[in-house]
Image 1 (cartoon, rainbow, N blue to C red):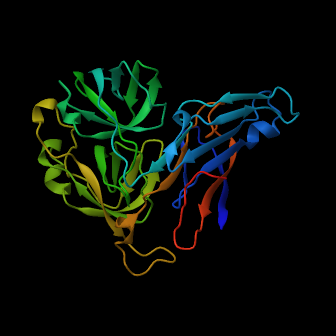
Image 2 (image 1 turned 30 degrees about the horizontal axis):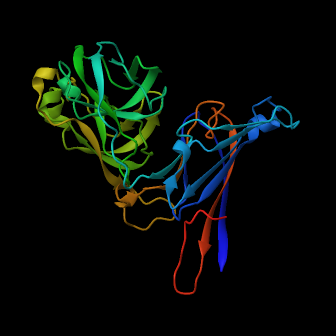
Image 3 (image 1 turned 90 degrees about the horizontal axis):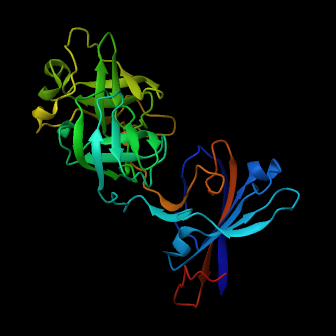
Length: 339
């Protein structure tokens, strides 16, 4: 006996890549850009199709692209962009290969000069800085990517100005740690009746979560007073990537990002502790927010351009995926790609 399991869904594009969770796998996927079809955009009503055989991506993940519009005119079959579709498993993802950088500027935010920005796009992606000269204090830290100028530079979105550095490497981190909420590196702290903390990677924290503030001595006088304290997140500002915690840090001192000469040191960071109280539907285990496995297995749709199945910002994207199986009585033969 043979059969096919069908999964369907819809999402609104944020202008970047989107991962569809398909934990049981899929042999093929179809994607439609509903916004451009409804808008009768000439050559804009994109439809894509991609197939896999036993989990192996074919044709460089390009798939088959059909260009058309609501009037069924200007139809054109072409190969989609390279990497349009890719199988994703965030529980087993590994960092990208090191890419050379030639300078890190003293701007705010710092500008990283490089001959290759492949895999990066503005306000999309996370990189790790490694083996730098003159900016060693950034070594081993991860940063959200800000403005990208193709094969020229990108900015470290939430990092304050530093003394300029030269040479080194960066690598793309294509995943978040699988347990939520994540540990985040701290780039700035503003003291007061409450404490505002800025992180180097876009926050996924929520109001009500408990975090521990870890600030080693290399970060200035505030470390003597705030290191090791826990606080509850009261508010979040996504534009600046800051959280406000209920720690009264008045008079605790100043947070100063270390210079390269301070290396080696342990980075300042926020570490999740749990929730101050269970959310609706949770048990009394307030550590749940620090132990939630969020690993995803599925398919990532490249986004950001008209030709991308993940769409441009605001596009409504429809998708359908299928997995074929064959039951021989005693043996399950799934993922054959036969449909």
